[in-house]
Image (cartoon, rainbow, N blue to C red):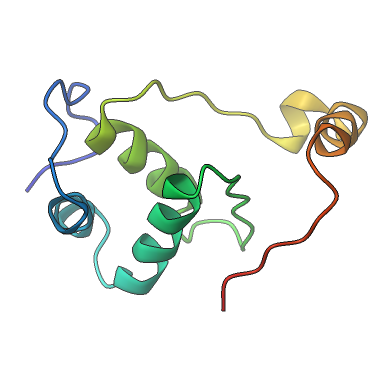
Length: 100
């Protein structure tokens, strides 16, 4: 079973089903959340992941980067500070897009 600690994937899967399948090997029991995350990426949107500590937010971000062969970086409130986060949020369009 692959883990997020594997070396970055140099040959990402070719189909959406293959990508979600590979993500599902890393993150178990969260197929709907994986589909929604991929929908955000395919729509060239932004994905903000909020939840309680320890539920897999960082694992999801790292798994997406690993499976897609992308660079992984991390920022948190403690690291960036609330003012920087507010500044970044202002840069994005003010329209709200929610997937239900």
